[in-house]
Image 1 (cartoon, rainbow, N blue to C red):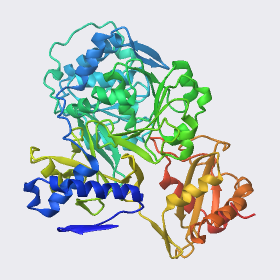
Image 2 (tube, one colour):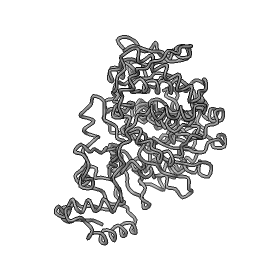
Image 3 (tube, one colour):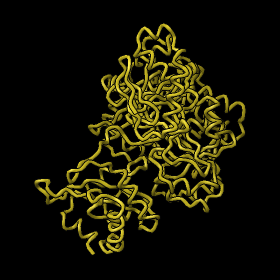
Image 4 (cartoon, rainbow, N blue to C red):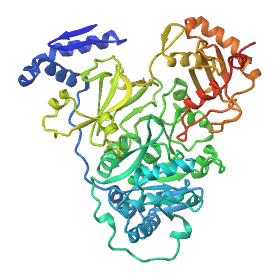
Length: 606
């Protein structure tokens, strides 16, 4: 079905249910008379604007909440001083104790006279009670925080400090030695520096001068060059994003015990820290990997009832072993049907969609019901509107059922990339003309975010995730195909799989790239190790891989065209992972490409 008229570009409904398309057409016919006369002067804009109202039924996003994050947290400290704020492997704090210790830290920072509004202070501290103290202390002193994962190499830490022009670094006693000259000043955070009987007050903290429009925190995002980029998020954006309706939909409250287990390199960790403290919940802090971190054991010991984690990490948990969990929020990766089946009927299951470029998150899906669609990433939270635009032109909207790029509109957008105006302008774009006509009172600088994610509307109005825009279809054996289709079929052959990846591999001895291989990688529940970053023994023995390869490939040949069947399936001992806990696709691809063709084929040669 196509539409063309009045200068509107051709629109094609791809794989949309017929009833869905018919309903949309009927609404267009019934509503065409209601197009404002002013918009009819430009038929293209008029039709598009009317289409917007029909498709989304959106309203103007709420205004910014002009507040500061630490003021919201201090309000919790004052209203429930004896309630638990932190329950960690290394200690416990009430909200009153959190308030006291963070004020002591803020006093020390203020005396240094180097913290100013919009200055970002890196925090290099292991997961412990002291991370929340550092966050709140920096905010009280008038600065902004940036969490760094302790797994970062020293050179990467140095690059970050230089990138943000850090005035100083807050570090634990175990990490302080890693910040070397010419890096900035280091202030140790921990029991030795903050538990001393020092009641000296500072009545002139810089936070008195911090404004809601000043930076609250920074977040990492990867640049195409591999160099770190830092997104700056303002106080007002965070306060708006964490308005009470958002917490209610997320089922986050003062009775929540939120497990903080995400890496400090993953933006979900900031959701954990700020969301819990702003709404008076208790943060349950898991130890770092390699320090006796057994997630299920930690959940039981700290009685955590709320968790945010990637689908990959959730596959390593047994619901029967964590009966205290009430809310499970999956984020950061695409879900599979088994991810839902595992938790449904046991917990309130959510899917959260967010990016480093926005405060908190933008979309939320409730997947608790048995008939939930695992592809759905949700509907916009009350502070957001979500639009689907043509991948090559934001001035063209995509009709219901069509695939396009997700465009986010709302007051909780990040400020942009620090010291990178070109990248900021590329992703944080001026509102398209059709949107400005819907928002006639919007300011001239009204912005939206190009997410780079391809989505489509499901018949119930929720958004379905398709893939990243920059992950194009591949061509192999003269045919184009989507690797995710092959991954889905491969996953069906391994019901106990915790991770599946299919990619094009160029063997190390293929000098002319004439023998490009399609390779499947599988990690199952019975594999030897969990998700780690180590390089040794990634691939299981050839005997273990060969055991099922012939059966799997034979079954796939019956279900798929020959060009979509992998040349070989390799079983993984463990999953190479990024610091944020996601599958490290590039590393796995590089490791496989170091092997000659004969070695790769041996994994499936029976």
